[in-house]
Length: 228
Image (cartoon, rainbow, N blue to C red; front, side, top):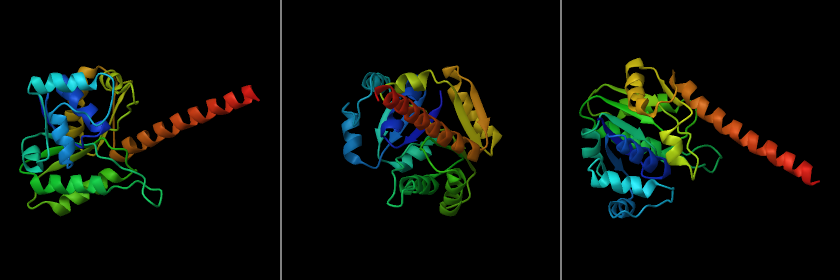
């Protein structure tokens, strides 16, 4: 059993936290939205995903999953911190990374010992290095840490199945030990694990999204031709 923090109790964060708890880990899901956290403690989810409500209830009852707004205790008590915050499109069309920055800054402020920071959010290539720079600049005292990219490949409506039975797990880091530790978390999923560097892992996520969009566009064009 590992102690895991998941920062962001949205779609990706809830699925990630609930599934890791269901694998036997101790998970704290953190969000800055107090109303969301209060509702989650009551079993009221902000999203609908088949099977998610049952998994969350089962693991709350088993004391493997809890919800909080307290960064200090969350970062202090866990070996891994998964960043699963939103990265909405900004006014210029680029990803808005303000929530990633906020999460990285809070992690740095509350670190008391070495921690592995794992990014699940969809981010531009180079964000892992940027997160490391933010943490180095924001630490109150030098504490070792590692950054790992572990992009999600979840489909709405099938997210639990996609997490528990993935086609592959992609991990990227400049720290081989940290990547191996995150790989150990995913071993119960019995899927191929691809370990590479930070930027390559981030690029794999963008390439996967682009390929999916291309397939959808292609089949839509075929449908248009057939209906013409």
